[in-house]
Length: 78
Image (cartoon, rainbow, N blue to C red; front, top):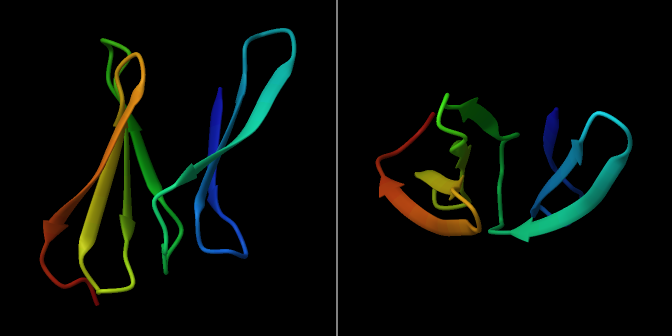
């Protein structure tokens, strides 16, 4: 189980449960996030995290072994 949130410093955080104990929290940085993140998980183990950045655009970070990103996907989210 994975939990993601935007902290008071506007960075993304992640905590996970391995079936026995909680690990983290882990600061993923990548702020400022002005909206809470949305997360999707794929059957191959890749986890995608999306959020609205301070520039109003969509941002993306993903886990595939290590964390990758962030990458700006552009656009303007209202």
